[in-house]
Image 1: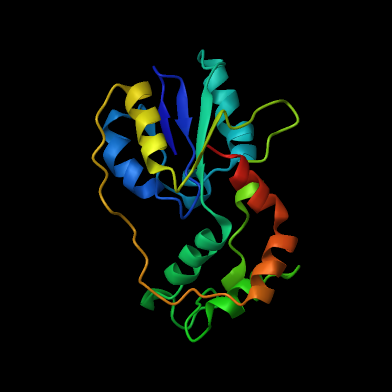
Image 2: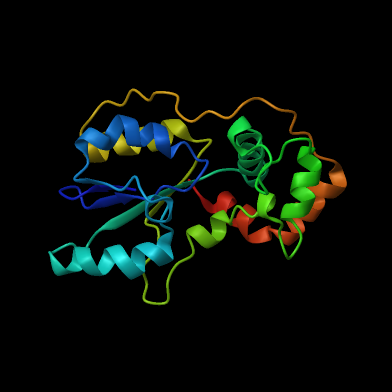
Length: 197
């Protein structure tokens, strides 16, 4: 999470949406960089609302705007699948080694997800709160030029993004039946991505 106090902007770090590269590029300009623990670095709207918003409002930050980036859901799951193929997870319940992407997505689409497929939901991450706190600027990961343009304009900088935290290449083909199941079971994720800029 990056906080730009003077510009009244908080960039939430939705996992697997390139936020590590933005943190590297923009961290030196931010008023606050939350990089650990992961539960705070990747604080969703509900956690921001519960912990960060009250603190900011006590010191004059009532008008903070939230920015988030979300990724096309199958591509987002592909990034998680590839990330969990890494050697440091081998032998752990969260590893996707020796498993097809199709099997990973089938497990993700079921009600009680096993540890390797328990990666959350982008729709839940950006879900508005009953008190009105919500994401003000929601960008598609695939619209990097729009996101960069917005940030350059808002922050008064020129961005040169590094490649960070890139997962290894793997086959991420899906059967038509699995894709249809994902679209049905995870409809909110597809709908929120369609609505993003």
